[in-house]
Picture 1 (cartoon, rainbow, N blue to C red):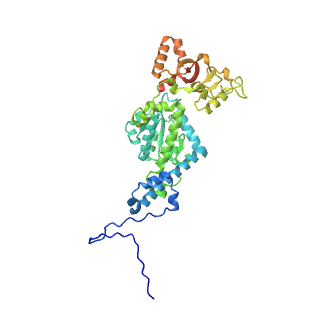
Picture 2 (cartoon, rainbow, N blue to C red):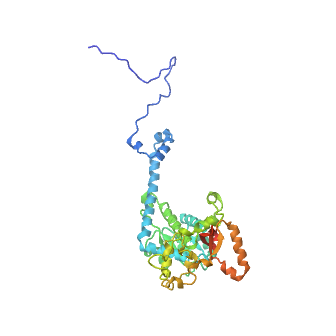
Length: 412
């Protein structure tokens, strides 16, 4: 049976009068998109579109590299989740953190400093934490344990607090240093141990405050070697938590303090310096009111004011348009004595509007400072009236638009 002949159609290109075929074949038609490709979000799709195909397709180790990187990131993220859960639920960790903050803030930043000590990778974490603390106006310094035994111990003052960073809890250099610290100084240890009974440093000094920073899995099990990786991430994160909590307790306006201490670089340029009182004053209408609900101002106690201030974003509370309590005044509440006392019987807690210092909201900050200084020089009575805890009321169209404490002017 004779075969039928049909013309053959292809996409090849032939060059006439050429002795060889093209060295580069023509491009293949695009492959249809797979379901996975259709599900890629736009940002990732954009990134993939600019990734050279020869890197994606011809580098056999790419998948292994990225797989390892994702494994490291995932491991450290999991460890942070475990650490978060520990400080949410564990009584020892929570009590230790609370005691550490109390020890560091016991002088309200007026005297004393935090001396942070560690060696090796822990030493680098200590130095970073010192830098963070100082940028938030928390006085801190780094002490190298070996150098301390050769003279640097002299930087430790009688009002200081000492923080040791050691994952093992038994770093020989730190153990050698313990006997040379004044036993009256609070001592904190940031370590992998979650119970005081297992930490060697605590055994040598039982009053040590324990700050647990454990990891859920050893670095050898995670990565095949025990180089400080996950452990230093935990110490870094816990140190940051400590710095943020302390700065919030010491300063009324942490952002203002940070701005003052970081005028240079990209961060400094990104922070818009306030120019007028209206830029920094607390909006009056945003201050929560007390004594207007079921409990009248007459029946309200110091405890009610304290709880209201705790819930207030600014720390201020007011009663109507005539009585206000600022953070500085609220801090004068005495535990126990004032908690059950009626608000109106606690001297200096609520400041009446007749005692507020009125000033136009658009007043330049520097001019406001100069005016306050000149008023303080007028007489001793005026100096008291214009003290740091006095209330400045910023005025717009004859109405109180915002409030601030006089002392906060010098934080801007």
